[in-house]
Length: 219
Image 1 (cartoon, rainbow, N blue to C red):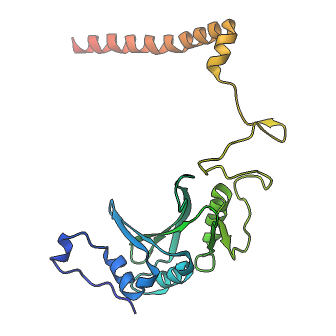
Image 2 (image 1 turned 30 degrees about the vertical axis):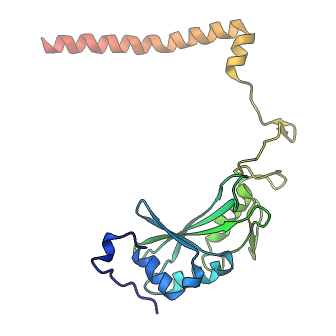
Image 3 (image 1 turned 180 degrees about the vertical axis):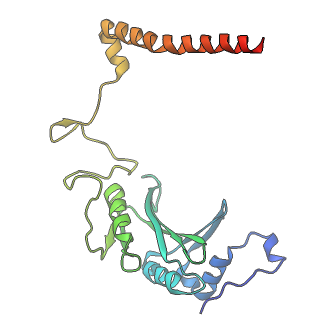
């Protein structure tokens, strides 16, 4: 059984992993590619082949007890990066009140990662959202389909190279720039100016009245 041991005083003065990461590393160092400490948060990068085992261990081990999967989210580092994609798992222990982030890195030509819906049921919805927006394939997912966009939507909107089409089933997906409309329709520009004046006049009147009243009260 893994235990979280207190660090010696001299170790606390150096950049060492958190107690949770250190205990995890002692038990299964082969499951860890990298540990990053930043802004009070701990991120452990895990090879995808060990992801499910690592999640089960972190949930079931009493000294960790990460019984709540708060979120699963993707990240596109950009087409120029390799590995290009990240999948981040934000874990929380409701009973022990500590947090941990797991990260899996994926190459652009192989965006498959095992589902963890068998570990935390809430992963079902989170993984569908990550699939919908980034195109990450969660192998073994019981119902992997889009959750935010229509089933026949083409592409993955949060990829940095995503280009939206001009229309969807005859519905325009772009809108004209209002400034361009003002250039081509002078009457519209006049109406918009008058509307702005009508909106601002009561505000100015209220400010003037408040200033006058405040001056009278100070006498």
